[in-house]
Image (cartoon, rainbow, N blue to C red; front, top):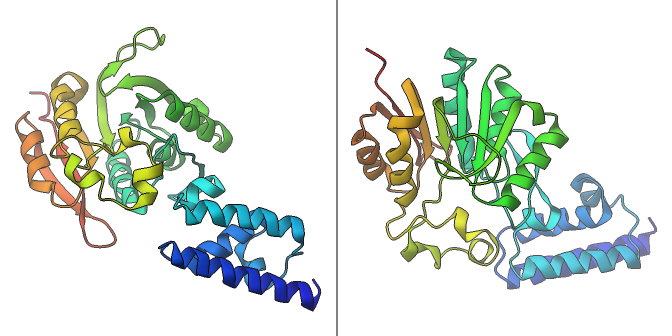
Length: 295
């Protein structure tokens, strides 16, 4: 790239950073570099080293992406992907963006599967398929079912599984919590050795106060947990007697300050050995419980 073009790229990148900063975007420098890399279809390192051919067409693509991010569309939706547990997932506004905090749930599940490698596993509310696919990648003997009420989410999850080579390892079923959708051709959900969920857990009061990236763009159905954020935990608990095998484990993600309330909900339906795991930020993030073993 000529020195004049390199200078133009740096000026456009600087202007983009200032645009994102003025829009209230966190990490505007990083986001601008990633968006320029996406516009140029190159790794970010080539942007940092000014090793791209910056021309008018690239500048126009870059400007369009910056406009989307300045409107607070999440970066993951703009570039169409998000890494989760070292897996590159496709994402779009029909699915919740996988968070690093949810990797704590996957790690806990893999610990359970290390002791019971051929377990029958249910991922309730699979979204992009992040949890189910991560398990398929690291626990090859597990039998995995993944459900979601959203057709769009299931299409994305199945597409991710197919692209990554795990489609044969995961059965995707349209279901509203424990109830398989009528007419979908899938059998009723049976019993599972391990039930996992990252459920909607944001309370009605908190939801509208979240960042614009979440409120404006992420699917509300994947976030809204009712007036106290606990509706879905109650629904999960209500089906455990029928669907969690004796001695089986439940592992769920929880929101800030919800640990005691969720523990009370699952203890009320007979689960014991309840433990809480912290995420990498030190926040209580995952709650694990176990059904009584068969007598």
